[in-house]
Structure formats: C-alpha cells, structure tokens
Length: 388
Ligand code: RFL
Ligand code: PHB
Image (cartoon, rainbow, N blue to C red; front, top):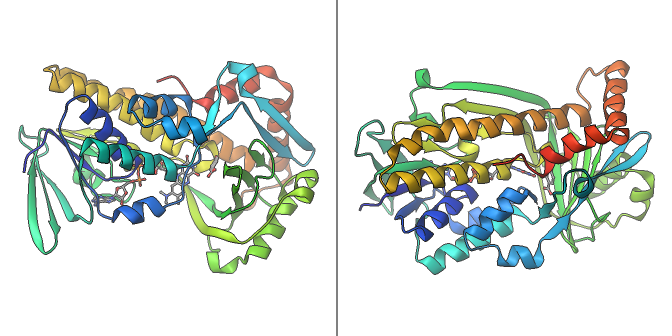
C-alpha cells in the first residue's frame, strides 16, 4: 500500500489534517489504534478559538458547529470577593465558540466518509521506519496479519501516549515538563448550564469550573488531590463541593442531576522539541500537553495542523524547504499557550502547602484582572487565541 502522507492517530489532529490534505488533492491514510466508537466516546475539550473555528470551516466541516455551537463574548471569574466578567469582544474584538471536541470529531469523521478517506481502525503495534531517509514506511498488525504502508511523509498525531514521539531518538529531542500536584474531577450532566458563560472560580477549597456543551448539557470540574479516584466521589458529594466553590448566587439556582460521565484528569505542561525528525512531523498532544485551565489543548492541535498542512501542501508542490519552518512556527505559538495555561492554572488553583500570603497574591492578581483594562486585554487576547 502507498500514500503521500501517512497519519498516525485518528483523533481531532489526525482527522483535521487528513481532511485538509485530501481536499487539496493530497493522498492520506489514517492509522488509529482504537475503534471509531471508542474515539467518539471520549469527552474532552469544549472551547474553540477563532482560528480553530476558521480551520474547521476551511476543512468543510463547520456547518453543524455554526448551527449548534454557542458564541461566547466573554467569561466570568469568581473570587472570594465576588464575580466579575472579562468581555473578550470589548477588549480585543474576538470571541470563542463553545462546541465539544466529541462533536468536532464526529463532524470530521462524517466529512472524511464523504471524501472516501482511508481510516484504518484497531491498527495494533504501529511502527515507523526509515524516517531520516527518502522513503519512510509504516507497519502494523490487524486481524492477525502484518501490513505495510509506504509514504513520502508521516504525521504523528497519536497523542501523548502514542509511538510517534518515541520514534525520535531520545538524544535528538529535548523535553520540558511541569507536573501539577492536583487533578480535575469532571462531570457531564444533562442539566441546563448554571450561567450563560463559563465561570472560572478561585476558592480556598480549590478551583472550580462551570462549563457547558449545549443548552441542555453542562460540564463541571473541581480541583481534587491526585490520589482521588472517580469512585471516591458520589454525584451528591460532587454537587455539594461544586456549590461551595461557586458564587452563592449561582450555587443557589444551579440545576443538578445524575452524571452522564465522570472522570479524573491529571494536569501537566509538556513540550518536546523539535517537532520534526526527518520525514516525521509531530502534531497536537503527541508533541505537547497543557493543563486544561486555558482551554488550549485542542486549539493548539488545530494551529499545528494549520502550519503542517501549509508546509505539506508546499512540499507536495515541490517546495520541500517549507517543511523546515514547521517546527519553529508551531513552537512559537505553543510556548505562548504554555505560558497562558500555566498562568491561569497558577492563578486559580489551591496548591498543596499554599500559604495565606500565596492566596493573597492570587487575589491581587485577580483584582488586577478585574480592574485593569490592559490586564483584561492581555487575558482576552490569549484566551480567544494568539494569531496563527
Ligand atoms: P488525541 O485526541 O489524544 O488523539 C490521538 C489519537 O491517536 C490514537 N493513538 C494511536 N493510533 C495509532 N497507533 C498508536 N500507537 C496510537 N497511540 C494513540 C489515539 O487512540 C487517539 O485517537 O490527540 P490530538 O488529536 O492531538 O488532540 C488533542 C486533544 O484531544 C487534546 O489536546 C485535548 O482534548 C486536551 N484536553 C482538553 N483540552 C481542552 O482544551 N479542554 C479540555 O477540557 C480538555 N480535557 C483533554 C481533556 C485531554 C484529556 N486526555 C488526553 C486524557 C481531558 C482529558 C481526559
Ligand atoms: C470544558 O468545557 O470541558 C472546558 C472548558 C474550558 C476549560 C476547560 C474545559 O478551560
């Protein structure tokens, strides 16, 4: 089997890249370890930057998002001293789109089906070969048989636990990492969202976030110790703790109900450099992870896809030098989002051993955000997305 671009991983990065390449007349094959149902069952991100929205439209799969997605012009921040709003539209003239990653992935699969894409699910033991030569190839196992795919380029879109990053020799990559000493317990529930826009809450008991997927589906998170398991938290205990951390006026009227999904996610910042090794290019979570506090994970995946799509398109038209720029272009934007996600995480969470002094500094930071238009403009610019 032969293709121009072999794509490892059929999550949002891999599907978006395949969709853009195919529409530009470039051949792709996507290899995904899991089943399609498994990929579509994952509940993850919920907030799309303008750049991600534009890319989905450009990929020809923005129709349902434009119909069902909710445009948010600002967000709320809650402190022990009350709640305030940062108006993105007023500060920087930009907005975000609230539309779940699950929906994005579904729309991408549907669009790929229309184009007749080759997406091979349940591909086991995927391995990458001859990456630094002119003729790389990929092998895998499926249905008890070995398979081989020859290609010009390989896009590693297989997430943090994938094999693409590991295929770059350890001495040829530099990794930067911070692991945070807490996790997020998330609950999805068929209830009306507590407020029209999101609430990010700094509270002495720990961070909380009120988010949503649509007018009937809410997504909430609370900061928990890393040792906590989903089984430790009954729905009732979750709602009680969430109410304590949200502003009283919201907690009083908030609708609660059975959880549809409940999971604990660790928080981590991670970057590997460079994002290229010969003919292999890393994209999305395969190259970097951010704590979800800035809502940047999926959005960074989208900007990587944008840069790689442009470079591959140029390379397939004969300008291979365009590929040399990919890693640096992507990393400049990635570090911007790393800084923002770290800053949001530091400002909003309760850290183990945090002193009253540290709490006061967080409150002072939030007070600046509440009262300084310049601080709001910087936050709004980062939240709605740095330029591509
Ligand atoms: P994904 O979504 O992890 O997709 C990678 C795909 O590759 C497949 N795969 C392999 N395929 C073949 N061979 C192998 N050896 C393979 N190994 C893995 C996987 O099965 C999978 O289908 O990465 P991608 O496409 O780069 O997309 C990135 C986003 O998914 C990610 O940044 C965000 O979801 C991060 N994230 C969140 N981001 C937000 O902005 N807001 C959130 O609320 C939010 N919540 C989350 C998250 C990530 C989580 N993870 C990774 C566990 C919650 C969780 C639990
Ligand atoms: C979500 O809706 O899942 C969500 C929203 C904003 C974040 C993180 C997660 O910062």
